[in-house]
Amino acid sequence: MTCPDSDHNLSEADDLNIHLIVSAVDNVAEENKDQPKPTPFPMPLPPNTTPAPKPVFMPGMSHRTEAPAPTSTAIPVPLQNHEDTASDEPTKTNGEAETSSSIELPRLRLHIQDIGHEGSSVFLSAVNASTVLKTSIEDISKHLYTNPTFASAHSTTPTPTRIRPQPPPTRSVTLILRDMDGVAYTTGSDLDSDHKEIHFSLRYIRSIAASRQTAEITGVVTHELVHCYQWNGKGKAPGGLIEGIADWVRLQCDLAPPHWKREVAGGWDAGYQHTAYFLQYLEERFGEGTVCRINNKLRQERYEEKPFWTELLGRPVEQLFEDYQGTIEKKKE
Image (tube, rainbow, N blue to C red; front, side, top):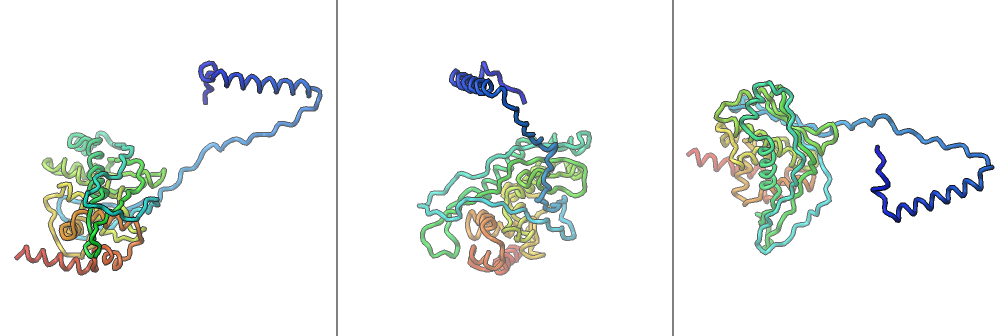
């Protein structure tokens, strides 16, 4: 630590005050010069190091391939809960939609572990890292945290209500490109869970077809960034719903790979694009902002399947999925 120059940093009043204090101390010292000197009190030294806390945010791998995998993908561990102090009370509105969103742009970092890897060259030539991260966060804010005006599908209240969604307090996001299996995953940093890391496979980036590189990289980054900004029902939401919301945002951004299609195999919580299309059906059926409401309800309360869906949309999720299956069968016919 360096000491500031008193000639440049102290006002005349401060200088006078210090002079008076020093003078008073000198007078006291003169009066007590014959008294025995007290034993100095030893000052404890600060510790040499402070251990960093261990990460507490650790979802698993979010796998994705150029074509649908024939086997099911492991569901990652849900995101860590965050406490927030925002009011959960809905506000009345006269029909004007609230347009502002509540995600503040965090500190963004890019870390390339092997600049000589072919995947690094593909990434750097296909996207601008700062642009793709910023744009993806803006898209997440638009689809999950912009307050739409709506009336509950089963509400008897004639006046629409407005939700007040609040994102988790993510303070920084570091995109790490490294040679690894799989596609990508999101985790908390060693500092704490408010600082997120997205690990993206250079091997996978290298394998992307040239015509798909920009869209696929942007889509994967968008999906993983959703995991930095979504809620999980106090840790109890199904992993398929967590992954489905992430792919639903990707779907809304027109970043769906060509192999994605509407399927009902595996149930409503099969995850990824399977659940994403089901959520899109709910959005179309119950109105814009439905998935935003789902995410916000996952912030407000511990997830319990039957009351969660019944309170939100007026019927059990299994019934909603049966209705969704019916629409797919009609389209096939």
